[in-house]
Amino acid sequence: MILCYYHQINNYALPDLARGTTMTKRDNVWDAALTEIVENGTFIIKDLDFEESERHTVRRVLKEMEELGWLTRTGSDSRTWQLGSKAEMRLNVSAELIREVCN
Image 1 (cartoon, rainbow, N blue to C red):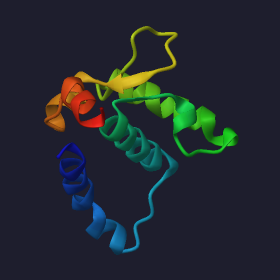
Image 2 (image 1 turned 90 degrees about the vertical axis):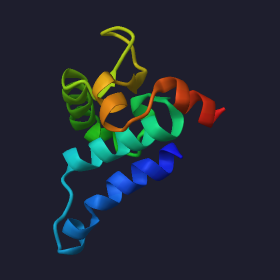
Image 3 (image 1 turned 180 degrees about the vertical axis):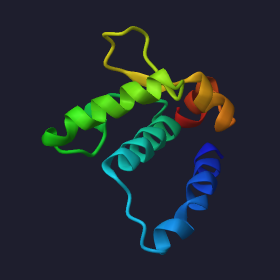
């Protein structure tokens, strides 16, 4: 159910991509992070499919997502990213529901 809802949101942007718009690295990080969150509930950077040379950009974008409330960590030094309050509200999903579906 969650995954279906996410794909409904994600598919909303597909017409723009079909017109030749290309996704930036930042777009790819947002997509990968939200996909991991919805599918697994949490992730670490190594779970995302990016090259080592791209990790700086990935970390920067994840920190921006955290500042905006899309992601959260248990502490500033934590390597595990999880659903933020804005993602819960905008995606209409909770961490508990993701855990139920994933287990």
